[in-house]
Length: 402
Image 1 (cartoon, rainbow, N blue to C red):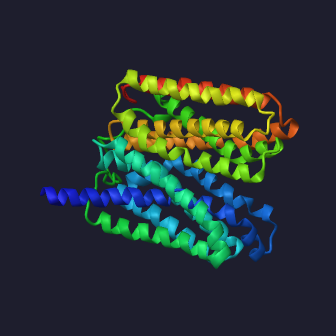
Image 2: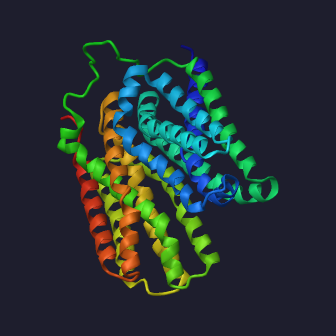
Image 3: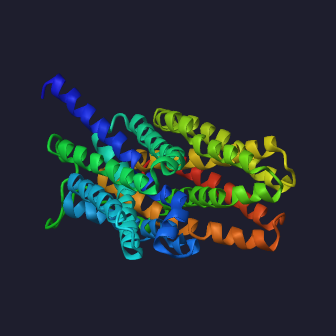
């Protein structure tokens, strides 16, 4: 293959990574911003639409551990295409505003994204094996850009053109991504072919993933950062309001919470894959100190100081972003085949999302009982310590199946 053709193929694959990243969160994070308008058209109470925000997480729980089987059955290229088609069909179905179509459409969107959550680390490891850090950074950054862009555009688009215009945008973007992937799939080789009908898969892991003790730290780190993230997004605004921080200040602070992950996504994966074990441990130590400072600050939260809440929120956002990106990078770095990467990613995400499902609910119970109570703060501190210890164990692991 000529150098020109190789470069062209690489550019097409890179564009696919960027485009897929754009639709990894926006179809599920944008809908909650329009629940008032949707509930008005459906004629139901807004509280009844809370299920639309829960369904994607449920799909992550149900599908993540089995997504590698979908890849094994269809091969990576076709499995990616089917996942993108599921997102496109789900967003299109939600254009028909009835309760059944909104529910079924959201299920399809959640199922598609749940598969992509597992497939994308494998995709990066398969097609960019020598640049895992670079392309993990690109992918992670575009996830955040896609989510942030729709968050910023939703209000003005709704005010100018109505909420249906946003729903059409949520269909248009997956349609473009699906079309581009079909174009890409026709021009690039299959790196992870289907294994259905084969009696022996030479790439298959030697042991079951759930019984491999080395895999559990990946689940713990992914799960704890997810607990912190989902609980923070759900309750940090309420905590600030409880201490008389203005609504405008809360909005600005939470926007920084979202954007803190962007510079981290650019730097962390590429740094980690080029570091030796000692350097990785030093990086974890820096992140650990910042995470622990945030945890300790929670014990003295009875203040309306915007500066205090700004720095606390930035530290929490840093912790979740760093350890999320660290885990995503290590999925490929600690495995030696796409199948291993997919199975480890699926296992960690299935268990991690299961853990995170309880975070906002349990914190809400503790906050309701005592908004300034120390119980939830102690639990948070313990979780951060456990996450740090598990991250160190990940760094000390040379290979998942040694």
